[in-house]
Structures are given as C-alpha cells and as structure tokens.
Image (cartoon, rainbow, N blue to C red; front, side, top):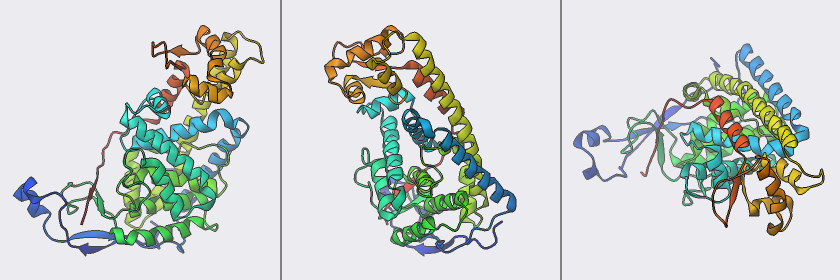
Length: 404
C-alpha cells in the first residue's frame, strides 16, 4: 500500500428527502432519518505518488505500449482514428450498462433518435472529441465542455454544470444513508476540481500513474448528477493527448476496463481508502488489453478494405474508391453523407454507390424509393466483434441523486 496517500474522511449534513415521505414505507423513512455522512476528499495537487516497484514498471510498460500503438497507426489516421474513438466511446458507455450495436450507433450519428442508448453513445463520442480538442488546455471549463457534449442531447438541464445536489452510489433513491459511497457535498466540488486540474497539469509524475490517479480522484469527486464515469474516462484520453503520449488515435482503454468491471470499481474503492496502487495497475492492464483488441480490429478492417479491391470493378480514379475508403469510418450512410465525404452534389453520389452495391460491398436496407440508406455489413460485423471481445459487464451499480 502507498503509505502517504490520504484516504477519505467524512462530515455530516442534515437530510431532507427529495421523495415525499408518504410515497415510502415507515421502515424506509426510519432507515433514512437523521443526518448523513458525505465524503471529505483530500486535495492532491502537490502530492507524490508512491507505488510498489512492480506496479511502477507495469505502468511504464503500458505507457510504452500505448505510444507504440499510436505510432503504428500514425500513417493511417484517416481510416482508423474515428473508428477507434467510436469504439472507445461505446465501450465506456457499456461500462455504464448502455449497450448498442454498431449499426444503431451509426444511425444515431446520422440523426436517428429511435434508440436512446445509441443516442447516448453518440453523446459519448462528442465528449471524447471535445476531450481531445481541449487536451492542450485542460481546465475546469474543458471538463464542463466534455460533460456538455456528453449529455446535451438527452439531459440538457444538467449539461456542462457542476451538480447542485448530493449524489451517492448504491443504496436507495430515497436517501444516502445506506449508500456504498456518498460523494462530497456539492459546495466542495469547484475547489476540488481546481485542485484536480493543478494535479493533471504537472509534468514531474510518471504519466500512466498520474492519469490513473486523476481519473480516480475525478470519480471520487463525482462532480455531475450524471455522466461522471464517461466524462472521467474521457479525461483519461485528454491527459494522454495533452501530455503527448498519444498524437494520432484513441486507444480504446475502456474496452480493456470492460472485461473486468468489478476489479475496476474495486480499484476505485481502494483509492478512496488511501491506496492508488490498484487503479494504476488496472488502467495499465486495461491498456494492454485495449491495444491488443484494437490491433485485431484494425487488421480485420484492413483485410476487408483489401478484399473490396478484388470485388469492385472501376477505373482507379473513380469516385467509388474514395467512398470505399470512407466506409471504414461511415459503415452506414445516406446520399447526404456520401456527398459530404466525396465533396460532390447529392445527385452525383449514385456513380460511387452503385458499383459498391453491385459488388456486394454495400447493401440498401430501407427498401424506400426516397431517403435510402446503405450499410457495409462487413464493417459493422467487425465493430460488433470488437465489442464482443471486450466482454460484457456482469455486475451492476446504481447512482442515485437527491436534493438536500
């Protein structure tokens, strides 16, 4: 155990239920009577991370592996950067039990609101893009912007605002008294975030350890009513990019965390008890799993694209080849998307789409005469296979919110 890392302390606050008492039983009211205890989160801006030598070495190896993965794809950013970012976003959402197939996510990106989970995952994609765009100036406003991008579609009233209410993890919606973890009182959030930003900007710490601790501290602060986990995992990528470890692509770290979510949540609990070792170890191990899975996805997509060269008959300078390249990023598209990708008028996209349909690369799936849409079943299958390899979450966790 790290001997100098502080654990949480606690402070009491009076509790006034948000849910009217007449809607719950007397037993429930009795269990949630009286004051509750909220976490007092220690500041960390100037602290040193002391870890066992083997964990320090593992974290350094993970940093090197992430840098290798990023460099490997550096010459092929266009086809794979958005794919890996979307895959990371979907995996991060799945940790929160928000699951959706690749086709539904692609449709949501085109504007469909038929599947709420897919819409939320697209919000996660937006949050990731915001995280990377703001990585060079990671401050409290950048974190608020990540959160706004994440939840603006489905929870606009809380988007990009620090919470003004008590939140807790587990237990009952009626009150925090039996919760597994009660986050700090909302009045403490701004100062704790300022402290976290100072910690995240330091350049004298081993990066993977710094990132893991910053993520755990963020999850402990729990600064939003909803979306803390996904924003906190976007923070990981903002720090990796901001400190220069990644430059080209998003390493799907959440896909590595997804396979053992119990260990991930246990590591966050250990951090709150004063030991950052487990969360550093878990993030490092997740990085190795993520790069392995990411390489498998990239290899499969390369094979698919190479196979199309033998299936499609067209001149080498034809529009069809540019659209074929774009299908890796846009496995579901309509005429408007194709026109944007090709930078041509919508009425001219059929010249690129038709040869792909004839070759079996694209399939029209709406059956409409107008507003038609096409899909690459091979690319969608590869993306779903990536998600399946990442594993499905078997445990559950609830986050409840109530006003004081």
